Image (tube, rainbow, N blue to C red):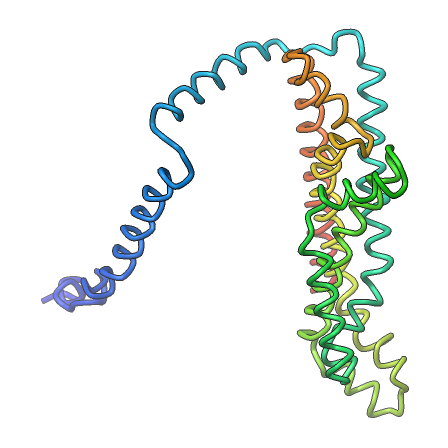
Length: 274
């Protein structure tokens, strides 16, 4: 008997055992049943789905062809405002998240009380969506891009600080121990042992958050936080679907460009770290 034929006659080598396949199959069936059972609880019916998709097809037809309606300069200025909100909000969040990440890292701050309070505070902040923060800041500082900037920063500071603390906790301890072995202070351990390891990771996360916040800044503009989102809401409200599709297309192209640039920068940062 050849080697390949012998493998085929050994159960569990080429083909997975039936017992091992039973669990994934049961999980899929259970998930499907739960999904179907949720339909009546949410008031969803096949008729409403069919009507909804039919209406969606009609709206998509009304969106073509996209047109600026003579307001390209106005829309482009609003797009730049959205990018400014996303960029400045991300940078402001990073400014506060950087020290908070060290405060929440277990291997930097050994005090359990400080560590616990820091983590719970970050969890509380990041559990509130940026849209809710936008509604809060609009009532605090008024309508406009400043409220959007603060909403982006507040929503991101918790997530960025958490990611920062996790990067610090998983960093290689050998550079820190090397600095300590030559008599380096605690500050020097962080400066020369930790920062060179975590800065490329933190910069890569910032690029991703900026890309994500460009979309978020569009959404929060709907509640009066400035940017292109306000114009998009107005065009949808008055059923100007062609102009609405033009605004959506502007956002899609912008996000695609930012994504392409940030991918190259992240690859460069990761390559430099390696």
